Amino acid sequence: MEISVRELRTVLNRVVSKHRDLQTDGFSMESCRAMVSLMDKDGSARLGLLEFQILWNKIRKWLGIFREFDLDKSGCMNSYEMRLALENGGFKLNNKLYQMLIARYADNEIIDFDNFTCCLVKLETMFRIFQGLDRDGTGTVEMNLMEWLFVTMCG
Image 1 (cartoon, helix red, strand yellow):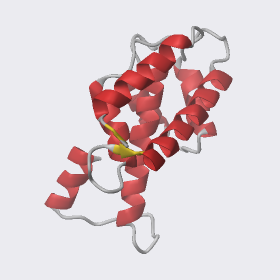
Image 2 (image 1 turned 180 degrees about the vertical axis):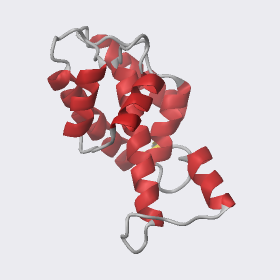
Image 3 (image 1 turned 60 degrees about the horizontal axis):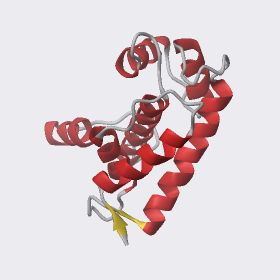
């Protein structure tokens, strides 16, 4: 029992369409690929039952954070709400990075649930990759061109 990127997209879009309090245009194939990549431990490009369950729990957690920090209950977030939500999600970032994330994941300064989730998936992936490369726990890494390409193209 494994779930493909396309099947994951179908499941997620069915679920979010039932949540009338969320503004969303649905999960894209690219965002579902990123989720599978984050959770796929065996390199199959599919999620096994346990991998899907872990992802599902993350999405439920992120949905709770999204709803909690959608302060005006509009079903989407503005940049201020997004910053509060990311901080609550454990991501302490600088102003320049917050601004870049808003520019990347917002549409006219508005972040819907699928883009919020995509942002968290990307952040979690990049933190995981960095921690794997930071073998000494120094907070810095050194990498060659192939490692950099792997991180930026596959991360």
